[in-house]
Image 1 (cartoon, chains in turn purple, red):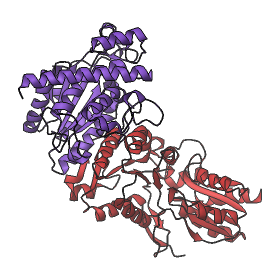
Image 2: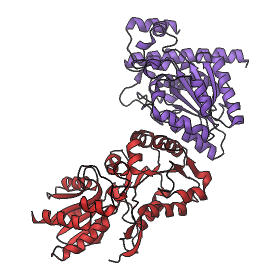
Image 3: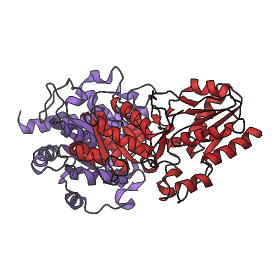
Amino acid sequence: MEKQEVIKSLKRIAREIRSRTIDSIYIANSGHYGSSLSWADIAATLIFYEMDLGKNSLGQQLKTPPVEVAPQTERDILVLSKGHGVPALYSAISLLNPRYLSGYSLTTLREINSPLQGHPVRETLPMIDVSTGSLGQGVSMAAGIAYAIKHRGQNRRVYVVVGDGECQEGQVWEAFMSAPNLGLENLTVIIDSNGYQLEGSVNGKSPQGDLKKIFNEFGFYTQEVDGHNIRELADAYSNARVNSRDLQKPSMILAQTIKGKGVSFMEKEPWRWHGGSMTAEQYETAKKELS
Amino acid sequence: MTTDLEKRATRDGFGKALLEVGDDPRIIVLGIDLSEATKTKKFREKYPHRFCEVGIQEQNAVGMAAGMALEGLRPVVPSFGAFLTGRAYEQLLISAGYNRAGILVVGTHSGLAIGKDGTTQMGITDINVMRGIPGIQIFQPADAREAEQITHYLARNNQLAYLRLSRTPQPQILPKDYNFIFNKATALKEGKDLVFFATGDSVYNSFVAAEELERFGVNASVINVSTLKPVDEQTIFQYANCSKVIVTVEDHSIIGGLGSIVSEVVAKEGIGKKVLKIGINDCYGESGDPKDLYRKYGLDSEGIIRATKKFYCD
C-alpha cells in the first residue's frame, strides 16, 4: 500500500477513535474528553501502524481489523501512563477487534462491573497490559518491561505515553534519568504535550524549560513532532526504532498536541476540557465535526 | 532449647541465601545504591548482568521491578525498609500490588536496632503500611538461619512479598532442626501462664525474658511469628486461648504491627483477654547504641520482664 493511502486510513481511524471516545464519555457523563482527544492521532498511528501486535499484525504495517492480538509477552507493549486518557484506548481496541470488548459496549465506560474502568486495569481487555491512573508510575513500569525484554534478548518494543502535566511528578524524572543509563534502546517515550492540566496551563504550574535539550542531555534520542500529523508521527516512530538501536539509547518523542483536538469548541478553550461535561447541543456539534 | 551463640544479622542470612538461589535466571536484583548495606553486593559481583542499578530511586526501582515481574522475572528490590515502604508506598500499592506484579521487596534496617544512624533510617512503621496492600505477604525472620530459609522460599514463588530484616547481629535462637513453613507460627518454649508472641530480633529477647520469668514462678510460652501476613490464626488462637496473659513484642510501632495483628485475632475469636503490646510506643526513635536504645525503649529482656510483670500483676 502506498504511504499516502496508509496515512489516509490512519486519519480515518483517528477520527473514528475520537468519535467513539466522545460517545462513551458523553453517555458515561464522566471522563476526560480533552486528554483523550489530544492523543488520538498518537494512538491511531501507534496501534494501527507502528506496533508489532504479533501473529499477522506485524509492526510498521497498516492493521486490518479484525486484528488478533498476540499474548502480552509475544508482541510490542503500550503503557498509557496518563491513564485518564483511556477512553481513546478503549475506542482503538473496539476498532481493532469488536470482540475484544467481550460483549460490553463502549458506553459502559465507568459503569460498575464493566471492564471499561475509569482508568486502565491490566488484563480487563486485550492490549491493556498495565494498570495505571496514579500519575507518574507508567514510565518506570515501561522501563522495567523494556529491561526484561532486552535481558531475554527478545526483539520487542515498549511504548509509553506520558502527559506533559504528568511530568511534574518526580518519579517520571527518576525513570528518565535511569532509562538511558540502562541503555533501554527498545523503549520509546511519547509525551502528549497538550499544554494543559486539570487546573490550568502546564507552564503556569511548573515550567519545564527546553525539554528537547534536556532529554538530549539525559541521553535520549529525542525528536519533536506535531502530534496531530500522522506522517510526522509515523516517521518519528520509525526513526526511533532505527536510531535507538544504532545509538543504544531510548527514544523520546515530544508530541505537540492540542487538548480536545478535533472538536472546535474544545480547541478554543482547552483549559475547560481536561474533564468537563457536555450539553446535548455540544455533543451534536462535536459528533458533526467528527463525522 | 539450644541456642547457638554465633551471631549474625538477618540481612546476612538473606545475602547468603540470595547467592545460593542466584543461579535462577528469573532473579533480577534492583540496585538502589545500597548493595553493601542490603547484602546484595556479592550477588552483584557474581551476576552483574542480573543486577540493575538505578541509583537512589526507590519509586523508580519498585516501578521497574513491577514491569519486570509482568514479563515473568522475579525481581528483588532491597533497600532500607524505611525508604522503600515510605517513599515508594504508592508504587508498591499500585505498580506492584494492583498490577499483581510479584516482586520481592526486602526492607533492611528495621526498628530501633539499627542504632546510631537514628530515626530517619529506622523502619518503624513499615509493617503497618505494608499490611494494607491487598494480597501482599509479609515476613520477618527471627534469626539469620530463618532469613536464609525464607529467602529460599520466596525466591521460588511469584507472590508480592515484603521481607523485613535487621542489621544487628543476633544469636541463633531457633533450634538447629527448625524448618520455616509458610504461615506457621512456632513455639520455642511452652508455658501455661502467659504467651509471648514475638517477631524478628524480639524473639530472642522474649525468649530470654521468658526464661527469667520462670524464676518468679511465671511459666511463659514464646511464639515466633515470622509470617505476619497472612498470619497463623490457629496457632495464635490456641496459645492466646489457654494463657492468662497475652503479650506481643516487636521492634516496630505498636500500631499496625504484630501487636495489632494478634489483637485482631484475639478480638475476632472472642477470646476476651487483654493484650499487652510491647514495641515502639507511637513515637520516633533516636540515635544511640542499639543496646542503650533497647533499654531506654523497653525492648530488652529486662524491659520486657518489667512491662510483663506489671501487666501480669494488674
